[in-house]
Image 1 (tube, rainbow, N blue to C red):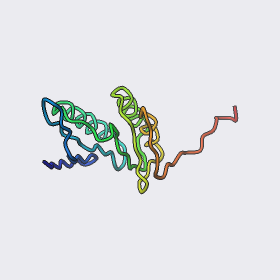
Image 2: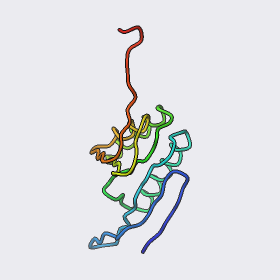
Image 3: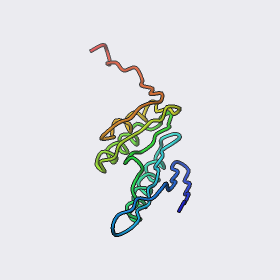
Length: 128
């Protein structure tokens, strides 16, 4: 069975199902793509709730990332949710995770970064 649900930021695809002795479990891909902003947090939270409610499993237990960045506070919040849910993070070979997206990447229990990772140069005020 294949379903596709498209949100502005997230795309879910069911992949082959897992069979357990008592039932079949849908496996979905969870992707976060585009600029990170307040609506990203809302959509991400709603997507996780829908996955939990349907008792589906996330492919590789990982959130797939492809983002140039955005709001660092929102990204850190999403990263903390990912860690609290014990999820992994994944950047595919042809994808990007830059700027605030790195805060999401670091939230993963296991982090798989095969694509481009962009980090800002950091420094101290007044050369402290």
